[in-house]
Length: 562
Image 1 (cartoon, rainbow, N blue to C red):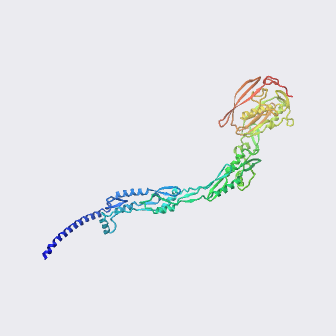
Image 2: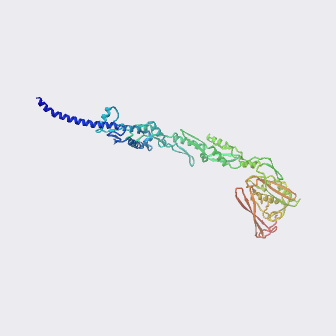
């Protein structure tokens, strides 16, 4: 019996020993693997660990950091399309609040299957060959940072909105309609972003836009335009010192400054532009200036009483007051006040300070004690002290008036219709020639002049002038930059005309040419004027002399005056 038992037990013992031996081998192998797993902690990634769907077992920390960095860049630079109704915008995820924690993700990869108790780690290791462990990536979304990014993004912060505009049309103010604005709903975008998985984001998110109307409606703008059209109408009439003009409706509307926004329409006139417009409409002097009183004694020039510049348009507050009256509904006409000219040149012209030196002088001789001398000296007395501002013209016939006995003139020799005769005021042509030459060398222009028809040796050949009543006249214009004071003096045997001003024009007499015109001699004399700005002007003066009295240039006899 016992033998049988032993007989049957022997095979079981052999099997047990074999099983036990196999177990010991497996245990030894397992012990070796477990020991290696423990020793690999922190050195390489454990077996069957996956990252972003890829097997990464055995990777060193450096390799893991590189892989994580590449993964983070790929995720964060991926662009998300935001469709906000008014358009589409693609933004990198890292720009709208997403972040990726590379350090934490790297740590998770390196500690995979090495976390928890010894038994947890052993269990994880034991099933490692059968079940893969996917490491969770560490990322985050900051709603506050995302909202700031959206609020500051140019495409999302620009609200496409336009207020209506009031513009100047051909006949009236017109309204350009406003445009309703569209703005993305940033809060809704942030809510949708908060629900996104960074590791598997959608290509786009859609948000309904918010409409923002203009703060001023088209109707309100039109009502404002209608009101301003009524105020400006067909324009207003204005006047300064009796001189009138019309500010047309179009001019007034172009001077309006209209601002639309913040729920209101504000309108007013551009006051400086209004002032400029008035001054341009009423340019130049608006009245006479008060000439200075100047005395000349030899080389001494004394201003006895300064003058005043002419009034001009307009007082400094004229534009502002006119603008206010029109906006208040007044229709005019409006009288504007003039002001004294403040232009330094005009002030200097009026106060006499520009009369500093003699710029020309001319003298012609005559015999003593003849009747004609009284007429010459009477002309000198009338014209002594004449003050010509730049641009002003002096006509001898207009200024002196008819040469009559009542005006202090007497009968003397004169030329009329080519014949020597006696008439009241005879001889004044000598004064005309004298002042002509003084003006010639002062650089003045001549609006009208005529030479004698007979040449007298006391005058410069070809450079002289005559005068008679009512014609011919001698008219000269001050085209220099400074006023000219005409000063006359005389002796028993000569008459002198001097011009006082500020010397700035250089005068040079050029060639003189003579030719025949029938039986007459035609003389041309050239004068050159050089101005401070470099301009050079050459003008030519003409004289035609008959061979004798009573003969025209064709050689025909002229009937004597009746």
